Length: 256
Length: 181
Image (tube, rainbow over all chains, first blue to last red; front, top):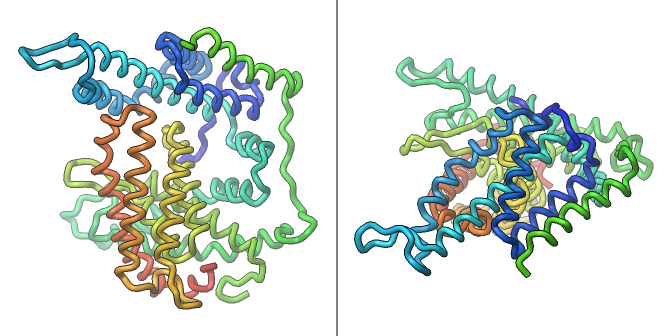
């Protein structure tokens, strides 16, 4: 099981400081809910898709779209049918399939959802998880909370591995007729498998606690500290950019 | 240092939260239960309910919220991560608070079954309702309605299995009581 989310690529996004990038993503995610012209939302979608394409290649850039495709289809099917106000645009006999207002609403919803999806995905792809943790820490996340975050990532592969081993050992005792596929748990053996996996995970807790104690956790003077993020070209420049991008975007596309 | 006691409460609490967060991630991404309609549900709710019944509100809230948030990020649904953090965090918190045993020294899993079920049902409502509201804001309340039955089914399975698993873990590994905060 791979727990990494960073994808090595090229472009300015990789040089953008994680703290400033986080602020930009949050500001733009809030901004898509403000009164903006639909064109502005689609410009944002296009910019993020092109950014993903440039940074990671077309195949990778289409992955988020594939992930939300089912929801997009649901939106296209349900929104016009449930939004009945306005003048009819599409009709079958006397039944109105879609009104102009419903299609306008759908247009905004689809663009907004795609925009948020690509913004968050681009942030995750172009920023190493350690830098995201350090960015949160810079914004005030406590030492202990950051430690939980990093330790969880450290434990994901080993717990996944032990789960697969437990599942395989339980599978040895199933009947031949029962179809076994990795990652799928049948209801008949779910409780023993899950119980064993949880017990194995719980047994590691005292050892982890002791090793944290040895590293000085709980003492007044800790033995470890987090490294500091360094912004190329100065942090002020990065934050200036992170304020300018959403501001310019809003000034150009707002409907106020 | 027997039975998992290190004498250092912060270290034990951090270790507990980190390991259970990782378990939530693994159970969300790796463990899938087939449904009758040829779909899959994840077992993240089982671990959230289990954490709430055994380790109290804060561990359940952090492990549930952070675990599902990380799973969303790893699974390619980063836009859901902050929402999952809040919804599953609140789910774990409320389940643990409602199920909490009035008897000192007992864990919530020792409470009467009806209390555990009520707590679980509140968790189901929080989870399905939270995702409905979040989905409504993200892509419209009409389309968000579609997810309610699946979310209710997933959290319902989580409650049933959570009760069974928390009691079976207490039997299989009694020192777990000393890990409970």
